Image (cartoon, rainbow, N blue to C red; front, side, top):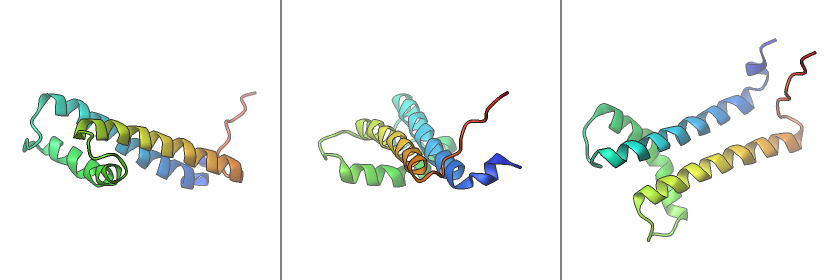
Length: 102
């Protein structure tokens, strides 16, 4: 039996949250070296993936914070969401369990 499909409700949201978090980290690091209005396709992809989430983070963070700080808070929020989702699934008894090697 394929464990991925048995626990798809855990793996797919966890993967999406992780992908956005690591894309946000990539955008933050690349943003150190390139201008915000750079027209490269990789930069546009980073912005396209992370901008919707950053709008939500910007809404809940103080307006005095700069965009790079909001990106760092975004990564922290995404990691917190991943942990909270796992905690919820564990509490409901729906989380995948580690296999026993024996």
